[in-house]
Each structure stands twice: as C-alpha cells, then as structure tokens.
Length: 118
Image 1 (spheres, rainbow, N blue to C red):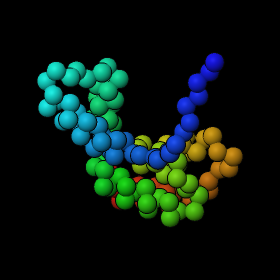
Image 2 (cartoon, helix red, strand yellow):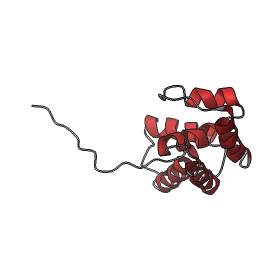
Image 3 (cartoon, rainbow, N blue to C red):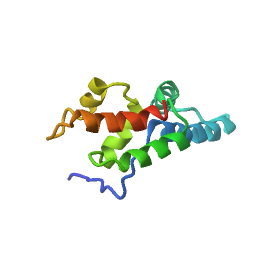
C-alpha cells in the first residue's frame, strides 16, 4: 500500500521571507531549552542567513515590480529576487530553461528594476 501526500497549498517565498519565518521558528525553539533543533532546520537557517541579501519587505516589493514586466512570471520573479542578477548573462542563465529568449531591451528592463534594490 502506498500513501500519497496531497498538496493542499503552494506559495512562493523569497529567501528573505523564508529567513524571517525561520528566525521566528528559531526564536521559538530557543525559548524551550529541552527542544533541540533538527539538522535540517539548522542548515536551512544557516542557508538563508548566508544568502538573503534584501530584507523581506524589499524582496516582496521587488517581486511585485518584476511581475509588472511583461516576460516575468511568478516563479521567475522569485528566482530573480533571490539571485539579484547584475548583468545580462546572469539574467539569461535564469531564463535558460524557458522556451523563449529575451531581447536585449527586455533584459535591460528587468535589470533596471533589479538595480533599484541592489
């Protein structure tokens, strides 16, 4: 017999938003001296502390601005907000698996939005 887990909900988060949520969990766990942090949780906290470049509010604003750009869908907006590409090559790497390529002007439009937050 196989047990399947049903996906109830899905929500995208930037690394900065995940950092905020994990910080709350870490604080909660710190209050309970008997409760030890699991390895996975400790590694996740270490990861977001190292790679979250913006604060949660800024990253959310960046995603919202990116979603206004024509060729940026929701998953890609979150990737861009996490990686903060600085040039066309870095941005092209994010779009490498898409079925279309962006023109230089489209790439520049996205990079101009990112530059406001960098």
